[in-house]
Length: 547
Image (cartoon, rainbow, N blue to C red; front, side, top):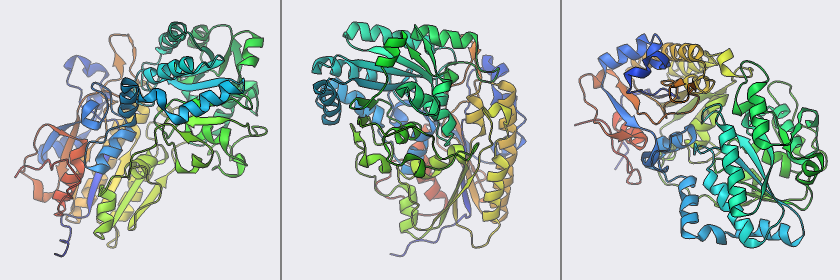
């Protein structure tokens, strides 16, 4: 039976990253989405069907109550089904006891123990569940105890983006208590994620984290020492780098202990390293610095300095384990504790490609991996018939300094494609601003971010509809709809667990109804329904269009 020709095209899936719906009127004063002037969103919601969809917890394959994130969100959208996340797999392994028999972890810990070397555990230090969980770090400490490892050092990466900006000291205290309770390990360093979890090839940041962890390399002058881990975090609260770089995210890379203790706890030849984070996009750069031969010749240049990597000195000989597979290229030099399950079949990108339907993906640097790598179930290469354009994000320390980001460039790239009669029938575009600016905690900047995105969305939707096409306007998770936490009295910089709006725009959909109770997994089946293609059996999500 021949494949139907797509209808209602060009179709554009527009992801307003971090644009949620806050159900609490008492939050209106710090709801950037509500404060912003959004005439496009207002018009679309008046003229076309609208519903709310769920983006967190069990609805996206995360533990109940856990906020969603861009990686998980885009994977669920592209898959057309709920995707159980690595966090759940690891937690289940801990509960069953399987974790403590993990061969990769035992290889690292036993090897260091037998050689009289140290075990180093690097982990995000928060309970947000976006990049890692403290329960996984504590399980690693327990495994070290069971295997008799005596020299165990914890390197805490403070969060402040997916948690409140001044919660890190409390999390560090939790780690200290766990070390005492389990009877093994001590905190050897605290490092803000700004340094240790960069993903934009800003190697000058990564160099400082690497120097803190190893005592070597070009970033050594940017490292300090403190007698206390909690004290180091609180000292940064009192004396931040700048007014725009306050809180846990930016904590100065700090070695903990006396000078002798600090030297003894650096990562050195023969040691074992376990990177406990399960989300792979942000640890990649520093892992590359640790394990890649000829590191500087293998990595992209910094957008700020043009430098490729940094002078790390000779490569260390390490037993290096990552909790999950961060990227295929690292597989030659690291072992993976929890490899990814087999690739899913008939995700949206693969299905469209198999049917010969062209597709175009576009985002700025900060979200480009999400509309490509994560949307395609951790596949780096585009599918046949899939075109991509990346727009460079602005070169600023924090995006409240440029809340417009590169939305106009993303808009223009999509408009150029929509204006080409030979352009792809299906377009996926991400506007990063509400999320990335929302993470800064600046309400004023987040309002400008939402207004910028609203105008860009209007231009894209109008262009698609002018050619007889259609669009879904939605989000992957919330953020900008809550910019202040009344319970803590501080800025709210994390994602939310609120639902997000979903609008289906197009002349064919005026007067139609969308069902309630949907989730991100329903977007791909809805997309196929809109363009008149059958959903494959592997997609267990359901179209949101009511009959």
